[in-house]
Image (cartoon, rainbow over all chains, first blue to last red):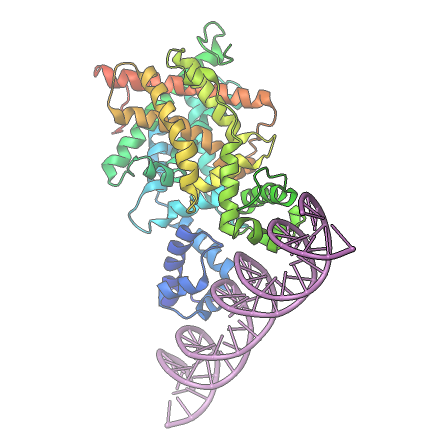
Length: 223
Length: 223
DNA sequence: GGCGGATTCAAACTACTGTTTCAATCAAAC
DNA sequence: GTTTGATTGAAACAGTAGTTTGAATCCGCC
């Protein structure tokens, strides 16, 4: 369709500008005129290079996935210490979701797509989310020890994911509640450490409740 | 401006239809023509009764808050068992976020507004979110015992909120991952019990790490 | 019955959207 | 230097959005 090595300046500028605009405004609210304005290109450029607005959006999502940094090697090693694996997973996810360096819109874009999916969600899902999910479920299984109810594993994994993604999804509200966004690497690492420890505690408790039926001090069902 | 007792049929039908449409499509994607169609009203009805589209949206948001069910009494009692208070909080939040009964769009609408805030976020924030947040921070403080770093309390509280709201925010992805949505009250209660227990484990671990500096087996910072 | 304000209605209006058009421009091949 | 194909540009196009208009209708009240 078009150039092998996108040396094409406009092509790439459109991609970058579109990522930023789509991330801030959302697919529908973003106008191709604003994108082209930010990219210093003509309105017709989008249709020429990407077919239509949706094509540009798909290209941006693919770019987002392509630019994802390599995962921590200990993450994929099933023999590594599971606590270390969990920490690597959480730290990587927090970075992906909150990191402001590089094109900072990757995380924002994925967050949007999760809450308000377009037809292009499947791109992100199959290429990025599902593999990660498999890894996480493996780690949680390791931490839970002997095979428990699969539903317990899934819920614990979801508790971990929820803590990470909510850091992005709830950002506007957190800001207004006076909770500052972690900006530098140290703050991100500190947050990742908290979520890791919190989750280790949660998983440990789920493990105990799952194995011995003796003493769940408070199972819930309040009077 | 208009009637005291909204016996006015169209007024109320517009409110209900708008809630549903806004929740599924989002503020921008929702068209007043679709809303009026669903309400069986004329297109001009929105402007007549609510001034403009934004006015209708604000009215829907206020309605959402007004219709929130009373909180569990043990929630507000500082002398109640903190574990019970936490469970009551989580169960209430899960219900608010996932419940499909009644106008089922309340949770969806708040979730949208958190991720992609409009000017009307402040309505929800001041009337609904901020008070709840204060209650939760109080409960977590209780559970953490002696006053720790305030940042620890906030992070634990955020871990709890994150687990709850992500059940709504990540719903489209979870669906595709084969994680079914809790439909009946029992499933909601079961999920609430998991999050409560998981969080009690997490808070307990945060408490230990915060007080004695002796033995955090894995603080994070992997080799 | 007729008056008067509130409400509903079909239609038009204005603004903005994504897209298309076609001439102008550029870059290299011959 | 001309030709060829790819790219850019300004303008126009078609569709849809929220809103406005002004007549028609309803409904309680004198």
